[in-house]
Image (cartoon, rainbow, N blue to C red; front, top):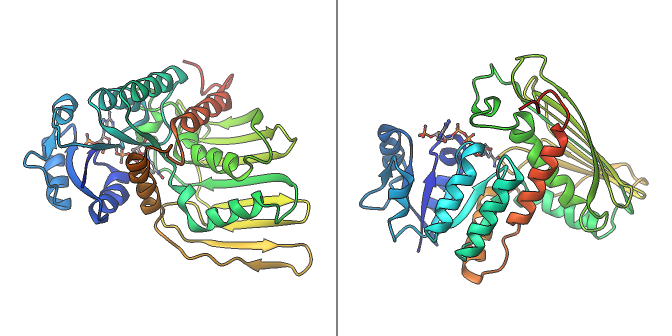
Amino acid sequence: MLNVAILGPGGIAEDQHAPAVAGHPKTQLWSVLSRSQDRASNFASKFGLISPTPTYTNLAELLRDPNVHAVIVASPDRLHAEQVVACAEAGKHVLLEKPMATSLAECDQMIQACQNNDVVLAMAYHLRWHAGHRKVQSMVQSGEIGKLRHCRTHWTFAAQDDSNWRSAPETGRWWSLAANGTHCLDLTRWMFSPSEGEIVDVRTIISRSKFKSRHDETALVMLQFESGATAEICVSVQFSSESRIEIYGDSGSIRMESTMGRHGRGEIFHDDLSRGAKSLFFEPANPFHGELNDFIESIETRRSPEVNAAEGRRNVELLLQAIEGSDADSY
Ligand SMILES: NC(=O)c1ccc[n+]([C@@H]2O[C@H](COP(=O)([O-])OP(=O)(O)OC[C@H]3O[C@@H](n4cnc5c(N)ncnc54)[C@H](OP(=O)(O)O)[C@@H]3O)[C@@H](O)[C@H]2O)c1
């Protein structure tokens, strides 16, 4: 049994990671780190944490427990690097929420610490385990819509105000780009890889017009791959809408409606340019289960996790390029 500790008993941990770990036959929820003893205790009793000492407000103390085998880091982005390095130095495997960190130097420290201590570092891009996304990725990479030309992703939500930690420099580096954009970048690269090569050009328009916050509220990112294929990403915290991914090739297109999010559902349409768009069947599955399975298997077999640290680092590099020179990059 793999004993898993959680750092940051917030939204994503409570909603997805804790139920996934508690329900998996090879894992059990062992302990939790919170800044508040009360929040840690509530989390421990809600999910039935197994350790005789399940709650911590100090990371070093949690990591001293030899029965902790793996850690899920689900804290604000600025905290990732310090926490992951501490986990690695304590010999714990890490499943890390996206984005990996807020600078490339931090990414390099984390990669080095995990290599030095021979622990797995897996990135939690759960949308790669959406059953429909997996089907589409394999279709487009096997040439079913011909040579790939363009991808468009659109994913927004309406924040009520700018109180989220992503809008504060002490805890975040990007807002819309860290909430949704990092997933869109990961999906775009994955869908177009390896056939179209790497992303070689990144250009962005950023708006901070609604909340006048420090970070990107809307980001329109344009990308070009080595092959010449292009992509657009629209992410925003200013307005809500249905998510959409469109992929265009020489002999057809694929449209994914409302597939982004935590649910693993949505609708997908394939247009082969002869009979009009047809619905593409996939069996909805919880993407967080696939993500956890991959993490466990990478620990058991020592193969690279599906989204490894190098991919997490590349994503951060693209996020940094996306805000370079903008007024959301002024510090
Ligand atoms: N894969 C996905 O789709 C997805 C979705 C949402 C979030 N995420 C990622 O998961 C991580 C956590 O995001 P979240 O939405 O779960 O955030 P959240 O709801 O705010 O939870 C984060 C937790 O981190 C702890 N924390 C420690 N220091 C903090 C600080 N200075 N400010 C705020 N919280 C602090 C808090 O727990 P205590 O107050 O108990 O200490 C808080 O509950 C982020 O990296 C985020 O990008 C991923």
